[in-house]
Image 1 (cartoon, rainbow, N blue to C red):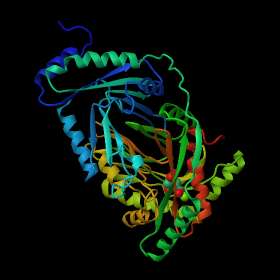
Image 2 (image 1 turned 60 degrees about the vertical axis):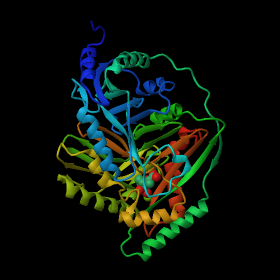
Image 3 (image 1 turned 135 degrees about the vertical axis):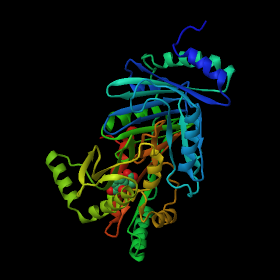
Image 4 (image 1 turned 90 degrees about the horizontal axis):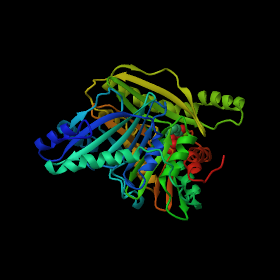
Length: 461
Ligand SMILES: C=C(O[C@H]1C=CC=C(C(=O)O)[C@@H]1O)C(=O)O
Ligand SMILES: [Mg+2]
């Protein structure tokens, strides 16, 4: 006699029949719970296996705990990830009575910026492509909350798994207060050698001037923060979430490391036949008053250097979109996107695609856009490898999720940082064109570092 959960019978039948490890997944609508609270509740049980993703329109939030399946690959990574994910989904049994975006089995993860770059020690936990399928995932969409439970079973012995996970689920959904942990204290900020960095901007300008084909290169720098003890991601994530309401908020843990950030930039979103992407490049400061803010926005819209920086992105995105989609819409002129610390030139782009095409196919074609790599991408990547003395890791690369219906969303992981034990590595870059001025570009990276600096306690404003 099978008692308890209504799906337990289906589960028992399922494990009798399977051959090899297979996914059993089900979705339930639940009472609302703060997704960050859910993330925090998993801090002991699922440490090093958690993720969080909130889109910039505040349409949906995902919080994932645990990992029942990992996908990693170095060669031909987008295609490999897709075929691994397809193979898992093809054999899976999925009970999802809700037709809601972002519910059901999801693989969450991302790609490194440049798999050919020599790996930095700090990125050792992150493979060039790194995805996992959570055991439990909360989805908040349209004011409703759902939980997806994923059980990976390999036969009859898996029977107790179901009850075990159900028990954990109940515990993790309780809204009890987490005991406050003593936060790590920031001891030192090492800004990288900014003179060296300005010289590399000058070198990039030279390379562009000497090469007829090369139009733009994006160069980044790294700031290292040192703390008195291991820094926990929970607090940093909460600060980002509360402090940057108009950005994508993401976090992905890998053992003792956590990569997180507050990015204004969407790489790609696919929902059935609709594809959305973004051209985001060209920047200016926020004003102290509303009047000053509008003046800055107005001059950004008419600034030749920034318009050029932006237009290279539009050119590339337009041509990729036109080769892959129908009904491509690219506005003629950029508009302004304002986030807390900076404003940008912004051109949203849409198109219609085949529903059965994977989001990864589009992510692969767009990455790296000239907002993060340069134009043309190949030459720009070579210049970045020559001039940047660091591994970008997942910075400036796609991070996000894909579901079992080929939908999903990837942000470009900028305004981001990597937490490893008692250190944090923060990244910021900027688009270099011949009209760039190294001093101005340095100031621009300072604005771009603020969201992460503030969240780790290194900037008070
Ligand atoms: C490379 C970054 O930003 C890109 C996105 C928006 C504006 C940019 C710019 O104006 O240079 C950059 O292309 C970063 O934040 O590290
Ligand atoms: Mg710029």
